[in-house]
Length: 347
Image 1 (cartoon, rainbow, N blue to C red):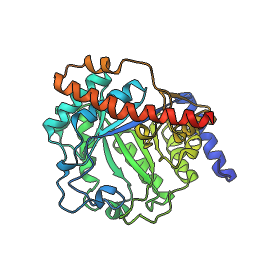
Image 2 (image 1 turned 45 degrees about the horizontal axis):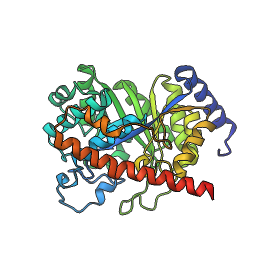
Image 3 (image 1 turned 60 degrees about the vertical axis):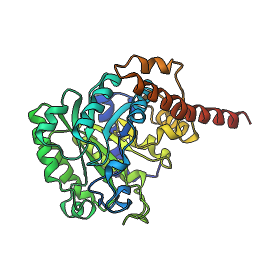
Image 4 (image 1 turned 180 degrees about the horizontal axis):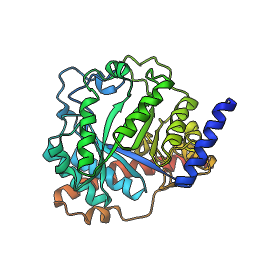
């Protein structure tokens, strides 16, 4: 834990009391599931997608259906929440998105958060049987800063989407990245935005400097800075669902972020690092914060994974592809991680 000023310490303690009064001590690990790694916009100045070759067709960056659905099955059975289903704008057709949402809903038995850019009302209505709400990748609410970091992704279309989503009784969520140049006085802009569009969830990330972007050499925001935004929002909105995004080298800030009001953790590369030291450190941090986490980042349940696939109403060819992806990629890597860490602990 960093050394805090008396004012900051008081802020954080107040936020913790408000959080525990409204949510108790249980928290979640959230997995955002991506369906592609390319984007038709591709010029947000903080995003790795902006470093992709100019003119590259975002459809060339699509993940396979079996890979996407295998990850949903894995997340479901490991007790992870699905933060949102997302990918680059223009990577999938509306028909493909609807098909994936339908399959994901069957797997999770829960409606999902969807983040695929600003959606028009007809698409919101089309996807509504499978989604609980939409996420606007707003990133920052400061209008001048937003022009710099998201030159081709203005806020207005997201604002329109939020209004139309509420008409369909869908929830609205937003993203906010700490460390791109926002000022603390911008907290009032964020609060006003949350109130105006009845935002029920916010993802508070810390900047991850990406090679080839204008933020490549930027300093990452401190744990205290990220915690300050979370604490302010928790106090202002006691019932708001606040998710803290970290990274594999930021496990040591988890306890602080949870103790000031975060409901969940995400942005951790859980399928890659499951069972490794970083995952163990996160679970230790959850305990340090006196929280209890649903699901696990270190323990694999003893279940028949093929049976989990077989119960789905998918064609046999796709089921076989999902089994192969699940067993020979995801589970194989996870088991190898667990075995390696066990050998290290024995030595």
